[in-house]
Length: 224
Image (cartoon, rainbow, N blue to C red; front, side, top):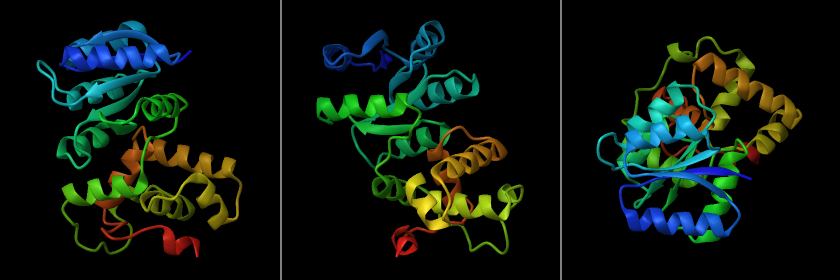
């Protein structure tokens, strides 16, 4: 059974989410009204997922996410947000959140999202994530050669990194490179380790920040 902690400063939202998740078979291990309490609940209960509101007192959801990621806890952070282009969401993704979901998301889709993140995947609508990143990041100047943060990657790893940034899934990358999905996953894990990040979402952010992927790029032409 998937274990979840709910962090939101509004009691009505906490209660509603707890009811939705519990009635659909998820195990709500705790609730928190601020980011500090959320971090402590995660440390105590080690849930699979924490549903994390961003704007909370004491410690906001961005800093709480960063603490959970830095501590190496197995819990994945799924950000709760009211607006899909909120600059705070961008900061939370950069801090290591596995994805984000709108508070208005229908219950069944919310539960499916929690299960997706619990399984180790990132919850992204790739087009929405690209829009979010493009909205909140300055366009870096065109890079000459390989940007410094990426110089430890092999040529193939850089290729995989680039198409991840353009929104391709492991299945699409495997078809493009004519390799197995298992091989792609191996490349992705090595890239994560070399770049010292914990999620695919952070790779997308880094691809834009380094100028490897530019606003307006997409993976569509790569699949043609």
